Image (cartoon, rainbow, N blue to C red; front, top):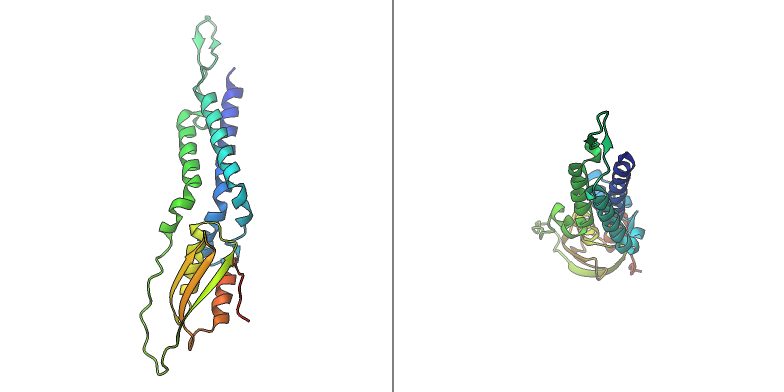
Length: 207
């Protein structure tokens, strides 16, 4: 008799996880882009960032209702002798499964706050001796499309791979990047191409 309640709880749990995943996709895709070498997809879901507060609220609301459904007293059926026999839920209808789903949703929702741990730190590169004296310059860029720390780490990672780049500092909340590089080795256009290649865009390109 309580099968509909169990089914409802399972459906709510699935909805909660999907909402949590959608809320953090804009920060998960940059990491996947680095792992898979697909830089252009990093900003694919950046349009979801303005919706994040609503998706977080949806996740919390849906999972809260799922727990209410799970914890409220369930109706029992009578067996042939008239004794009450509580219905036994399956694994996917159990409290343990819902608890696992809740933990997963929590990890997804908080991913933007710990995603930077998965990126290598942008340390200073050692200066390589060459026949040409280095021409060190620092360029500042305004970057559009970044929505979280993962986006900033993605830009830092890709620009840092360029030869001649010594250091990169990116701030997603300010939408800026500072790059110190050897202009005799790396032209400005190459740096801007690397930034645009991550899926974000340089808003103040050089002329």
